[in-house]
Structures are given as C-alpha cells and as structure tokens.
Length: 373
Image 1 (cartoon, rainbow, N blue to C red):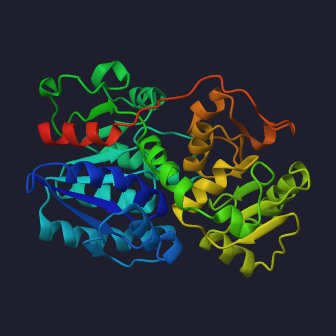
Image 2: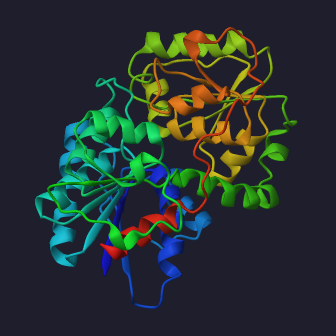
C-alpha cells in the first residue's frame, strides 16, 4: 500500500510526526509512505526545523509554492500536487487540518479518484469569512474517510448529511472490530479517533522539559509572564482590529512581560503598516516547536488565535484567552480553561471542569483503519 501525506504549514508538520512513527512500526515494505510539502510555510523556523526536531524524514517532494493570495496559492498547489499524484499513483492521500494545503491536496486527489482521509475533520467555527472554515467544509465533502477529533465534530458532520458514522460518534476504542467496517466512495466514513495533537503534545513535553532552555534565554520565571500568538487573517488584515487586540492584551496582562513569537505573516503586516508594539509586549522571532511548547507550559496565561494552542493550553492546564469571536474548539471553552476575549473579565481561569478527548493512540487507529479498508 502506498500512502501520501500532504502538508505545508507548521501545525501539519507536527500532526504528521505520529503518523510517520506508526507507519515505520509496520513490517518493512508493507506501507510505502511519501510526503508532499507544498511550501506554504517556507521560513526555517516555520518549516525545516520541525522536520529536524520531530524526527520526520525530509519531504519526498517540496513544491515551494510560498506566499501568495488565497486563490493563487491554492491554485498553484492544486496544479503541482496533481502532477505528483499522477506520477506516484498512491492508494490513499492523507490531508491534515484546515490550511490551503489541505484543500488543494483533497481536491487534487478526489478529482483523480484517489481516496482521501481527512485528519481533524468535522470542525466548524460557523464563520465563513475565515479561509480556514471554507477549507474545512470543502475538504470534508470530498473526503472518503473523515477522522474526527471530538464528538462535537461528528455531530457537525451529521447535521451536514453524513450518515455512515462508526461507533455512534464515540471515540473508537483500540479493540473495536475494524474488520466489520464498510464504506464506498459515495458514502464517506466518519470516525471519532480522538485528537492526534494530544498524542503529539504528550511526546513533545517530555522532550521539551529535557532540551528547551527558552526560559533561561529570555530571562523568564515560571508563571511570571504571558504568551501571545496572533496570525489569522481576521486579525492581521485590519490595522484597527490588530491594535484593538494589542491594547486588550496590554490592559489585561498586569504589567508582566508578554512574549510574542512573531509569525511571518504578522511580521509583514506590522512592517507594512508601521505599527509599533509597546511594552510590556516583547516581540521575538518564531520559535521551534519544543521551545514554544515549553514557553507555553510555564506561562501564567496565553493569548492566541491559534486553534492548536487553545487545545494545548487546556491540556497543559494553562489559562487561555482566544483572540477571536468564536472557536471551533468549543470543548476548550467547556473545559473551563479557555474564554473568548470579549467575554474575559480579567480574572485568571483556575478550574478544570473536564478534560476533552484525551487519547494517545489516535495515529495507530487512523493507520489501522486505512490498511483494513
């Protein structure tokens, strides 16, 4: 069996890691796995360092698409991915998350009648002004298997007409009888396998604790600083919106340092608009994954518009304020560790009501299902 993973952005490199490790555990030659890197993220700290740190082999193909408008970037990816798929003729294509790379990979494969597995399917913010929301919806509706991270994601798909749902939407247990699973390309399979990011986080925290010296480098003490990340188009397209969020962070951070690892898109936006970032916010370059995890783990609180960091904060027991009007990760709000910024009243969240979908065998379930179909 030949499987091709299509990735292009930092969160996808991270999700790829456990999939690679599971495939490597099979007998030599049983699964041939290749990776297409679209080049959506091309900066070293957003790109190659993740392959180096996570022990992922160099991509078999780097399409080097780079930065461009939404339509141009997606179109270039679609064209170049199709060329590779025609050459490689895989049995399955795996796409991850909600980026332009995700959508381009899913469209290219589905038009060539190659089965598509979408990892992190079913998420919905219900805000179609977000490019990520369009990518999620379209990817789900051309996929053959939809691997959901939560039961809420399964319920979202039910409302959109998906009916072939395994285990009634509950997390699939490791001893579930996979041999009985049936599907055809006209009736996509929906499976709640849990969240692959928890598996990654558990592994990465052990490494970060041993290897990261980011607190020493930045002269920080545990729980005496905040972390800020902001990169989504909705927050980095309007100067007024961006400044409103920066002022909110300053007003609620108690004068403590706010460490702001800058995303290339955000850096470009700041430079183009001559925006000054005042104290106590301290802008630093993008961090490697392990440094970012360790910085976040030891923060007093996190401000972010990143879906992944919302979840990681929840799992690590770090209060989080989400700099958006809504979130697709409603479970983080329900957990008691996350709050949308307009609802934040200045009080640190302290009580974990419940953890959500903790499961550290997600990657094994994904691969075992694929090889049995």
